Amino acid sequence: MTEAWAAAVSEAIKGAPRGLDLREAGHLDFSRRTAERFLSACPAAGDLDRLQDTLLRRRDEVPLGVHLAAKLARSRQALEHIERMRCETREAGAVPLRVTVVFAMYREHERILPLEQNVHGEDFLIRKIEQLEWLFGGLHSFTWRLIAVDDGCPDGSGRAAQEILRERAARAPVRVLFLESAIRGDSPAIEGLESTDDSRKGGSIQFGMWTAASEQGPSDHIIAFTDADLSTHLGQLGLLIEPILLGGSDAAIGSRREPESVVVKGDARNERGKKFIALWKQMLPLLGGITDTQCGFKAWRADAVLEILPGLSEHQFAFDVELLIKTELRRSGSITRVPIAWIDSEAASTTPEFDPYLGMLKSIAAMYRRYLPAEATADAVADRVERATTAEDLFG
Image 1: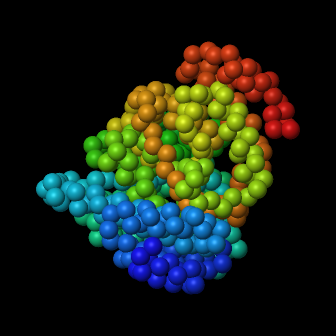
Image 2: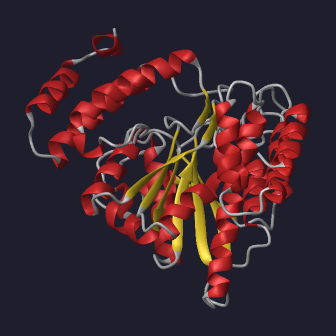
Image 3: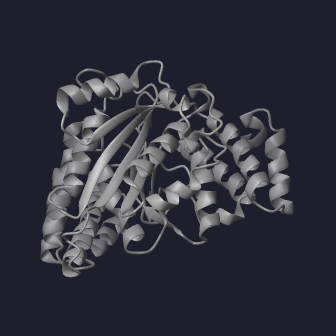
């Protein structure tokens, strides 16, 4: 570690907040400021990678906000590198690379508020805007926009988002869509969806991605989706963009299960996640190299989006899996796993403890039957899943 690294890391560790409360704006601001210090202290190629490796070797000693800062710095560095490459190849005057981020909202009327207005408040809409403004700020090779989709929320999450934008971010490139209105249309991305009751985030994400790809076109356009909460800092988006623009991938997916991932996750949720993975992997050997299908932080080339979205059968919690299957079938080996920092947002969660996993596994069994050739082990697991009537039948 160089003297500059040592000073930056030492200062960051001393000034870091205990833990990382997603409701506290100051905690995330600390990580952003620390990322900027890391960028200044690590100007040479590979320096940030080595700094991050150093921090990971001291994983339990280093505060979470510092680990997140290293991811943010590496993300911003990736975009700065892409901008320099475009300048060197005289592409700087070309049409900017477009990035659209989509997220769904259902019963987010509390979490969308600031902490001072609600005990569960993360002020997530304004924070997402701030995170994207920081990541892309000053970079002329990129433009960004954010699309929020109301997933049929009975508490008016979409209307709340529109009001917040009018009052606090009227000029931000953010749009609010409503899945209920889309169902009355003819979007091929949500074919077969008869009401918002049939969607559990999936329908809204699919509609938002299709809208983005259709309106802005497939050329020089990356479409990502994330969760409504702040579990994944959008300042890490450069980590997904890099393998798509420079590595030739069609998709890049955030993963919480890589050696370089930094994760804070409840023990119960982590255990059920491991059991879920063990079962789906036996049904979908096609995706054997992927360890985390459910992380709400993924990105695709827009041309791939336009090809894989039509004809989807899953609009609920397992929608990610069908997108990955169709991506892999379209072009084998085109998905890149990206280790990220992820902090569990338990506040006002609308996801039950075990209920989603049984439904997701049944959906995955149906995907296996639809997309893949029959295989003995996969058949046996699919049969077991299809016979299960409660989560306990599978998880004990």
